[in-house]
Image 1: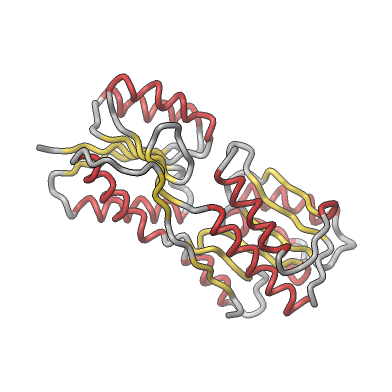
Image 2 (image 1 turned 135 degrees about the horizontal axis):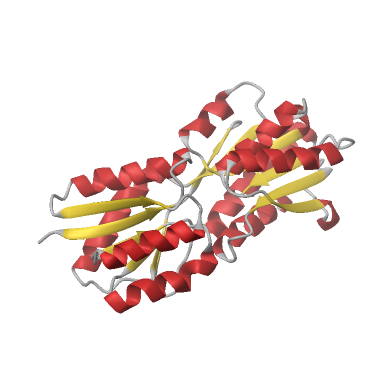
Length: 284
C-alpha cells in the first residue's frame, strides 16, 4: 500500500537545504511504495502553515517539517494531530514530534574550538571583538549552537563578554552581508574580529561584507554546515573562512527515510535522533 510523506522544506534558495531535499528524494526512490509530496516553506510562516494544511487536507501518512520559526510548532501540531499524522521535525524541534538533525551543543563546541585554535596560531590569541550571527526566530536548540560555539572559542582564547555582539543576521547570505557590513563599519579601529555564523550562509555573508569593505584580513570566520561551497572557499589561499562544523548533509535523506519506515511499522522510537558531527578546517 502506498505511503505518502509530506516534506515541507526550509528554503529552496539555500544550497545546503536543496542538497538535503535531494538526498531525501534519492533515499525515497529506493522504496517504490513511498511517495514524496515536497513543498517549499521559503522561510515564511504563512506559507509553512499553508503547506502543512495541505498535508492535512491530502491525508499524508507522515509529515516531515523543516521550518525556521520554532514558535510555530504548536500550530503545526494543531493542524496535523486531529488527522493522526505523525511528524518528524528537522533541525528545529516541534513539541511531541520526533526530532532529527543537529546536535547543536556538539557542533557548536567543534566550530568554536577550531576558530579559537586558528586565532591562537595566526593572531597570537588576540580577539578585539566577537560578532555572533543569530536568528531571532529560533529559541532553543539553535541558541545552543550559538552559545556552545562561543564557549568553544573561549576554551581556546580569552574573549570578554563586553566585546561580544549578538546580531540578528536573518538566515540568508544577503541579509547577513548587509547587517554585518554595518557592524564592521562601526568596528573600523579593530583588526582582530572573530565571527561565528549560525549557518554557513550567514557566515559566507559575513565574509562577503568583509571583502566588500577590504577587511577580510581583519576577520576570522567559523560557520555551521560544511557544504561543498564552504569547502571550496576554505581551499582558497588566504581565506578568512577558517572552520565549519560538518553536519553530514548526505545522511539526512537516508536517515529520515529510515525513521519514516520505522514509524510506518509502528516501532516505538526515542524522540531525539542526532547527526554525529565533525569539523572541517582550512588549517588541519
